[in-house]
Length: 329
Image (cartoon, rainbow, N blue to C red; front, side):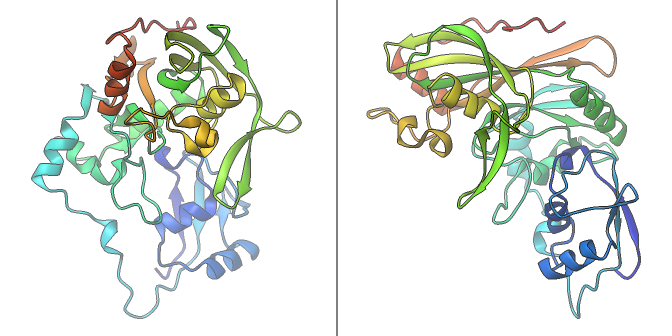
């Protein structure tokens, strides 16, 4: 690439670090070269200088200076992945809602939303299977953690992607999660309000409770069922949308780590004798958003197989009440 480009940040890239964005878009670009471009002001975001750790936002414009691809450089094979007929059938089986503007899937646990270092399989790489003879390739509207299953929105056009991105920014999107947590929290219903901030460590980024400089974060919760003092089935409704909010609020706010969440709960997150104890038991059960065609859209998705198996083992009902904890209209 020997000329200046101005590229728009997509909804799927919202919140991504600028240096990470360059790594995904331009995998041939070395770290040192990127740092020099940033340091000398060759990279601009919405016309202004930017640092590597800037969190970019949907629709922002990034000025990309000429990049020397080097002799013989070719795009990596992962840039364009051919989807097999078997993969297409599987991906289409995830669909729980489809209309002219939006597709909602039940993302499997263990599948990343987007690619990264060492991540070859991800939702973004399978979106071609959800094109359904449309000219435009679908676009991610938001993300879920790799090990979290559940409802995930995919826009069917650039226009729909921008529209739903604004819905999320305006806090009009409401999400309901199910989780199995270790312990029996009290009280059985309430609000967790703990400010959160990111902290860099040996294992990478993690969220921590930060009463001084953390961002406001609030989560409503309700205990649906408990197996003695061992494990509880909890409904969570995040009021804010911080990274790993439910996971850290459950552990720090309720004193009950999500079953299988070793990142935050350590050994406390595992239960002896439970076969799927090391798998994350967090599921995006439902989402409620304004419908681009008018009215309100509300979509539900069943939990992953390991979640259901654990519930049966613990003697929980197959279908507990799943009403919204907070008013959503």
